[in-house]
Image (cartoon, rainbow, N blue to C red; front, side, top):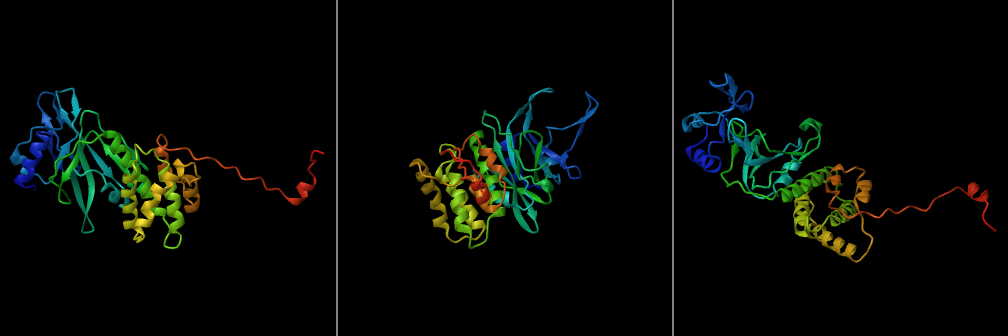
Length: 297
């Protein structure tokens, strides 16, 4: 059960938008509404009821009246089966974070941000479920279970965040997750890093500043135990300078070919990426066919 100071924190940040969670369904415990005769989600739990509950959740929307609700917060929910995406979500701005014990280790499972009037981005990448390849989704309605036998939460003030900034970073989280899953072992990494840096250099610098990309590159290197950190990181700024000077630079096609992978997450950047020039190879024909060609005299 949660402690009094935890409840005080939740009351301060979310007011009445806290609910007892049914541990079996993992959904808000429904209460009979005598006016409608229906069981409904409840917004008026007492402190004693919340302190004695096994599981606690936070509503993403506050109830204005019987017909209207207003979004007050949203959650980033990494759902990667291999927990790689969870690692990159650690680069998102600090906020209220929900952790879950997985094999005895605390894993950050949700990050809750307050809505600042601009809404919360709708983001869902990967398959339909964890087993089908889902990496990250955001939640704008419903409820986030933040406390249970397996879960706990940090008492950090939920931060307001620009929705476009958050969406851009979520795209990077997904892309780097896919890259890490296919990155080669030592021996071929320099060639892979050169192509990765080229693909990143083509992203719009205003939406994806070099410093942000370097943070993600550092995380990748740490995750794969690549000790040539500075050499890898500086490639991004170098490749951007090459592009500015009109030089040929590798892009996503070259990275995909080198790692033999179609990085679908790179399509998330399609409105923020410089197009790669398509180079058509010179046609190769056989010697016999060449002899039969009627060349102009």
